[in-house]
Image (tube, rainbow, N blue to C red; front, side, top):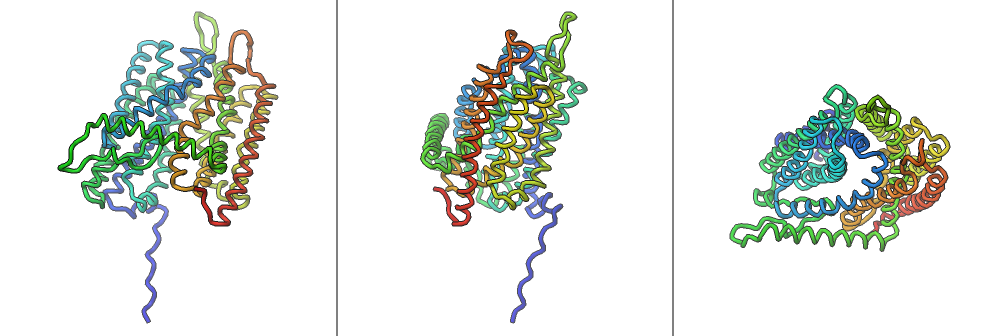
Length: 491
């Protein structure tokens, strides 16, 4: 009788983090991707505080709700153009290079103007606001799309945990760097670093794609024909594939336009999937419901921060020392990152094992309503900032992963079409609702100083909103447990 074959020894934690299970070419490729992801997430958390403080300094805190309200209108044509480029260029590294160059030019121009004068013109502050906010949406999805496009299922299982960890490290480093805004040239210095980082990201992705193409186990022709998953959906479009030798070349602009229009139609299909399936509609709600009260809290945090660190103008004290505001917002990001990491490692798994998704889905609505009511009764700087850190940590560490676990029990069509619509347009829809409340109820104006926060409306609205949110979350938790027990999926 033959002795049983011995199982190969399991790789150690260090070996898994260093991806020693992969071929050397792929390890180097993923190293470049990890560095690019670190820069994307790190510079995002670095430049966002500077963007907020610069907008408040040049335009005014009263205009922030207006800017947030118009954000979906700005994002829509950018996503359409991105989908057009994705299909027309037919090259992931070329697409990343084009997008990085465009954003680099904008940040460089604003950096130059900021070096010339400490307070940039209002129209430039508007451009900076929309540039940073669209970049925060576009770049992470674009980079993950490139990695998904080039990676096999086996390689992704090995490499992606390390990539996620690298992204967290990059986010923490970027937040810490922004806290030293006084020592790195102020807001202008951060803008220069952001512009330079975009060039480095393009170079890293270019080399990573080249290495992946050389090391790819699939034929070279198939590698060259890989297509990139667009922002607002997934799936491979035949129109975007490079034609094989001997076939007639089609105009790339026509291909890109057709692909972008088709992607818009897939967004419509995503809406239909959400509306026709209660389980998916519930996921859509709990995935975005936190954004309405959080946008309200964010605005109060910005307004109170603007008052806490004033600046001198002609001998008079006026709100708005933007460098100190930038440093404080960066420290808040550091707290969010550390808290999220700790709760994810030490709390998520144990909570799910003890109470299932029902417990983790209800954690955020409970924390949110308590946080808003605390602000309504104790409206001061430290109360607002403390509750913001708490709700952000619970969202990123518990609510976000729980939402992804809900999607596991859905079909592939729902995962791609409905989820992509929810993640992109649903988020901005809920943010717009919160921005409209800030605009018409809590907007900071001279007529209602020292504060224009309306605790009665805000508290009443939030309680009603969270009651609906908690009921839906509870029903989803029960339904998910049933689907797991019966081994079923929603299709």
